[in-house]
Amino acid sequence: MKAVRLVGSGKSLELQEIPIPAPGPTEALVRVKAAGICHSDVHMQSGHHPVSRTPITLGHEVAGIVEAVGELVDKAWIGQRVGIHYVVGCGQCSYCRQGRDPLCTNPNFLSATLDGGFAEFIVAPALNLVPLPAEVAFEHGAVLMCSAATSYHALTRSRLQAGESVALFGVGGVGMTMVQLARAFGAAKVFAVDIQTDKLQIAQRYGAIPVNATQVDPVVEIQRQTDGLGVEVAVGIVGLAKTMEQAVRAVRAGGRAVLVGMADQAMQLNPMEDVVVKEVEILGSIDHLYNELPIVVEFARNGILDMAGVVERTIPLDPQAINDAFTALDRFGGAVRTVILPG
Ligand SMILES: [Zn+2]
Ligand SMILES: [Zn+2]
Image (cartoon, rainbow, N blue to C red; front, top):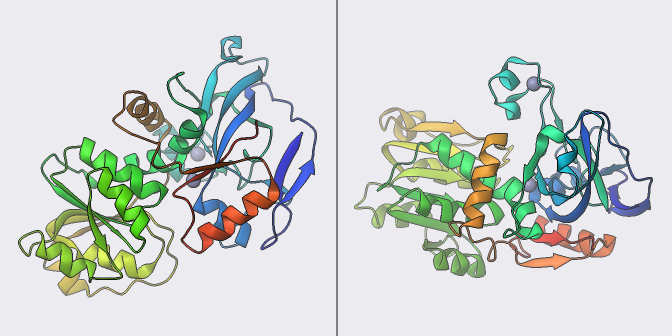
């Protein structure tokens, strides 16, 4: 089968012809119909985020049709439309036992330690399959497995209540679904902060108040539009220390800041001014739980989540097109989400 693979840190992805993998006793073989290109794939390609081996097939936002299953798996899966949960917990540690597999002490991940979805077929544990109803397109189902679920998890971590105000720093694939989910959670005001006019326009169509950080100081602007108080909930989505600092400072006294983006520079905060006297909570949020995936799939099926503005472009399983999409993402440009359709 064809697979577009990482052959070495920092190198362009290469098309390789490799054998179709055989599912183990508890696994399923899935014919890939759609695989999203995410910023974390770019981090794995650049070496910023480690992979366990090369060559490895990247791609952790995957949807397709079950082609075959191992001997211990229910045969009823065969022929079903599915998405795949990319966190493969060990199932044994205390976090896996609590259902918090993103915190697993010995985890595997599609595309970081296991071959991912930039290929014609993928093998995954049957426990990681998520049924995808016919109304949800494969390219939307793929992106639901990462960005939408990550958004849902972060908003759940924030304990957002109906009537509260929210500021989202960065409206790419994650932020654009978070705008919609925050509205669905009953947020009174959702501020979308970004530096790209086209993304801000899409966010506005989904009900956000756009804040262009190239034109105004977003913290000052958000305070101006919230009676000088700031928002109850801010989410730092872009992986930059500066936007994380802005997210914390945009929160009003008693509010919550959730940090989602993979910023690995030091963040500069004044503990007294920014956190202590305001009783601000700073929370981390990573990935999502298996149980959150059927919820976002249902939101997409019934129209609460519109994925059409999130998936802006589809490309074939072609290494040049994929490498170009990586370059565009690395410059914080390009489509909100590009999805590969292997055909
Ligand atoms: Zn992703
Ligand atoms: Zn575990």
